[in-house]
Length: 412
Image (cartoon, rainbow, N blue to C red):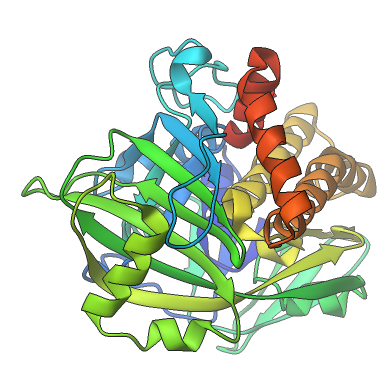
């Protein structure tokens, strides 16, 4: 069997790319170590993705957005502030409002969608996207899923040979590594990377709250790291829900994770403030170490690297998944264009074009999130005063605010 593209890794980035290419007429093989039940729908577990406006057209074109089984929550406003735990946020703040960009109806399924949409982004439950991915991966024409399976890949000048742990084998014109930060394919290709720890832990959960969030997200900078409240869709019973992404010093995180619900709610309330009224945790709590990773190249002969295999950034701006989805957009556009010209879409020239297309975005986002975390995760009074004044200054500069909003939306 010969495929056009083989994607190793069926997570959100690899899965979305596979569905997009399949719908564009490519034959695609997807390999993953884990089984992918086509209708798996676990109960609410507290995890959610922030999908930027610039990423949604990919999910539309891949057939994933209309397949989401649960409603997504639009983000129409973002409030950025600086403060201390247990005290109200500084009165010097930065407020982003979609109305300042001039809202328009939702983007259609085109990757080249209009620059204006009805939200800055959307909160999508992780289980909802997983269900949509599993359904589309198993239902798409010209797309075969091999899972669970391990892959041995041998890349040659004209194609790659893939041998599975199940005994099956086939070839592909291009292999895409989408297996995550420890990507075996990236390492096999000899692509160097370097990483560093922030000595911080991300605590992720969801809360139910008394008052509506009015589609407004909060990014509150604290000495231990950023604390974010992200608006999700109300439940079927009308309960108001938000996702919490809480950055804490690694040494302190286990203590917070071990608290009972009442004490855990009190700690969240100290950081969040009282604007949402009474709160309580819902679903599970999750924690993970925060680190960054720079990959020196994202291509090799017959190989392209995407998503977390290609970069790792601090979640301070909620852009990690969106950075990977932008990899998928760029790679899909280049592959489709090369195929339509009748040229070899796995050739070095196409892969180098992908490398060039992604370099500036990845490096700038990695640098920006790194600098932001180091700037805001410090108790130094002089630095805190400077950053508060900077936040207030940006708030009063409409053009600069719009530039920041478009960057957050993943749009030029």
